[in-house]
Image 1: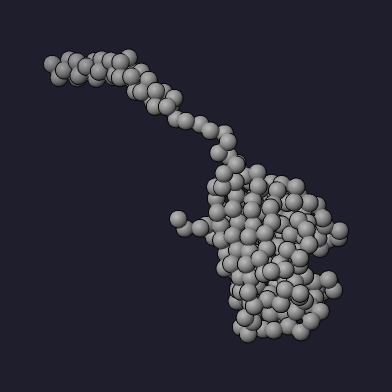
Image 2: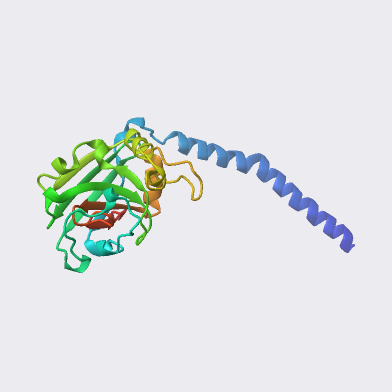
Length: 231
């Protein structure tokens, strides 16, 4: 008798499951399709601003002072004017990077203060965590005259895939191969060539500004790690 009862119960479960599959699931699927068809898609919104990151640049984000520049550093990366220790410099800045939603462009604006603008020699976006001297992702010299752009203390630039690829391909020696262009994957030779790849580093909080001057050339004068802007 118990065996017959078990069989009956099992058959009832199977009947209910079959009815659910026949009637309920198709209705749910139809509702889901109806809801998805009501979503308005607009490809033109890809040109709007999406992800936004900001950084507050400071000498105290630089990992060391110029007096500790490695002796093997090439002359082009060594200071040509007297250096000032990080904790004595008054320079600072505020920068922002705005990515379009389709990741075709990035717009950069940076305001600095306390910097001798005539002493600026280089300005970059690097990839790397705090305290790391990371490779250069964007060499702003490829967008125009950096010193002239900073003439009033405000820097503005538009970054495209072309600028990122030119940065990665501008290496002229072994040092350049290691310091120009950010790896797509750690330990592999392929380098980021797109705004999308740069934004991926941004989502990991691994992009930073670095402004170099005559007195602070190797490590940089002020540095700022980029973080998502809080809404």
